[in-house]
Image 1 (cartoon, helix red, strand yellow):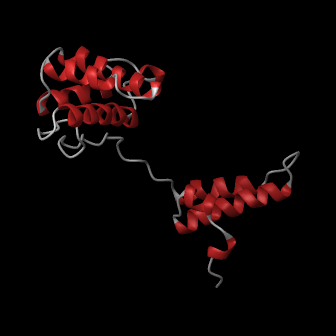
Image 2 (spheres, rainbow, N blue to C red; image 1 turned 90 degrees about the vertical axis):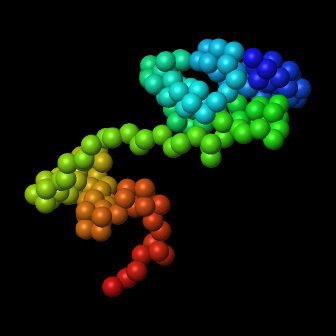
Length: 166
């Protein structure tokens, strides 16, 4: 009970309207999850999971909140806890909470050599309004990705000076 009252009083001293709004939203979410209970590690972990699952509100697309949003809410609560209870353990801090399990996306199915060859060959046949140059560019890019195992982000940001000539 004391955490909520102290945190609300502390939030009113923040100058930025956006900060006050974000911190009050975090407090409302905490109160919806834990009621007036004082923060504990077990409550903080279940609170984080409730945010991620969507039990306390849906994020975009009707799912739970994104990981970054959950971290922002916990950071706001961590700041309030540190300001209102100095010297006490801060159950909302990154170090205090155990790391959540990584989502299991399963194994990605590998592309066969034959499928890769077909995709590269199809890219080189671009014609019509796209033009032959674009088709050749696409084919070269796909060939580099396939031959080197380079990630698409690395290929997009690669610069000519960074490529070793053989």
